[in-house]
Length: 319
Image (cartoon, rainbow, N blue to C red; front, side, top):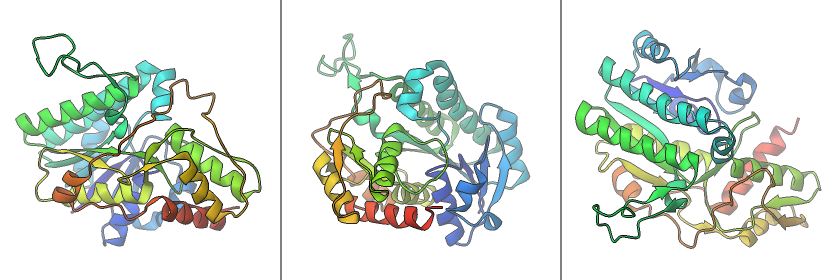
């Protein structure tokens, strides 16, 4: 059993770490690997790093054949996710949609069965339409994503499920909550960078800024564990799963979590001016029952435990 992990970033590096801990030597593919940051998460001697680009289909096929790959975890996405896609829609659409299509098509051509792909909980939030009572003959029956990033993730899920239906590729799309966790490299989504910066400032005795609205998060270690569970599940059910903390975090809860780690920390609530899109402000959390039933997933890192773990990691890697 050899796994190709595409995207060696916030989640992909943690997927590789878990696979190494289970005795596997995964192949870690990235277009521009941040070796120092990856090495802080997983022992580089225990993975096989390769250069590859999901926009070059033959590089994927070559990786599958050269390394005897039996399954794929595809975590690569356009930098800064929602924010990045709003700034550069064409590039994000190309990478997120066509990059995933290339991965699925390579799996189909080579005869690979299992492909697990990163989706996003933005599909539980950034939607319009759906006012016609589900009558498909009416124009507003279908909910429509209201950001470019959400639109790419809806397309990825729909395309992946059709590969599963018509091409025999076992597909799972994982709707991660807003991810944060250990990572010293560039990339990641806007919210994850906000939390990393907030905790870094708090540890340095500076004012920390956290998002002003309720959000649903997932710690990167839980996101990675959900990914590995999807790689190994016998039955993927309907193929799409929420992977989150299973709870909404209010701004005050995040401030309290930071305060518990850094007593006396000063915290303010504000959205970053670079966001260009209002941060989601939901009033209910995602349902994890499908993920629990089919994958055996339950979050191991609630908010306080996640912030504690991240703070310990940041202190260890303060240099």
